[in-house]
Amino acid sequence: MGSEVDSFLDKGNSKFKYLRRFDAFPKVAEHNENEPKKGLGVRTILFYAFTLFVLYSEFGSLFDGYIEETFELKKEVETSIPINIDLFVKTKCEYLSFNWRDKTGDHLLVNELIKLENMPFFVPFNVRSLNDYNEIYTPEINEIFDRAMPAEFRDAIDTSLLEGSQNFDGCHVFGTVNVNAVEGQLQITGKGYGYPDETMAPIDKLDFTHVINEMSFGQFLPFLNNPLDNIAQIPEYEDRNAKYKYNIDVIPTKYNKLGGSIVTTQYAVNFDNIKSDLNFVGKKVQSLPGIFFTIKHEPISVVYTDKRIGFLQFLGRLLTIGCLMMYLASWCYMLLDRFYVFNDKKSLYGTKQGEKTGIIG
Image (cartoon, rainbow, N blue to C red; front, side, top):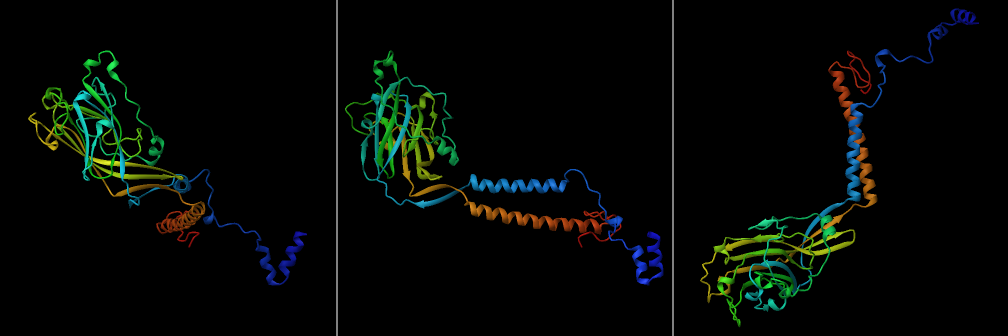
């Protein structure tokens, strides 16, 4: 049968002669053949790695969010602010005087508002800075929400009933004092010096070596770190009656996250240590040895807000970035193919050396 068809095609019209060489399923030219490679190529791995990085970044924006920091003026006028203080002073409590003076002329006898306990003076093991103050540290918002647990100071204990209390050489000063929210100064001096008093502390009994365990403003959040927390001022013996002056600038701070908010403060501090020659009888308070906290309140507050993008916005960004990546990848492939071909190298798409055209272009 095949021979008869061949004979018919040979004797018939010349147009049928081409059917002898017609192949309905032509083979691909050898120079266009490209043997498939097993496994993933370097380009594919890099593309997948970059894609995973973009997905990680975008999902982070959706779930982890980002921190927005803004500054705003106080909308409400504050008339008072709590001062939370906890410190050890190497002088018996009965020899110390505690006062608050501010720009309005208000004078508070802090002795009646603070809690005092006689104690043997010591330096706790958790002191972070000696004869200095801590570096300014801005915690992350997650740390704030983890550690911002409100608390109250305990009641004072009558330590005079303890054995050996007559030999106690220190005073534990702690508690919360509400003062006017204006510039003022908390003064810790010797009793009878600077302010009239029924008794006067012996000069040789005054020693203003001290440890600050807590110094904060606003709601008492003891687990938040502040620049003056856990510091100690331990001078030489001859300088024990120096004047320690802390200049504090308080900034109201608010943290917002997932519908919750924490209102607290942060502050910056400068420290001066002025030596005394012990000739301070009859001098003004500003010239007396002691521990002084000069406090200023800033009118601008800082607001930290943990924000997250919406789900629809997230999808839109993801689709946009995906399309852009595919578009850039196609252009990179095309440019690399051109570069390989023009340099007489095998095309990325299978062209052998010597061919000037790749599959693309």
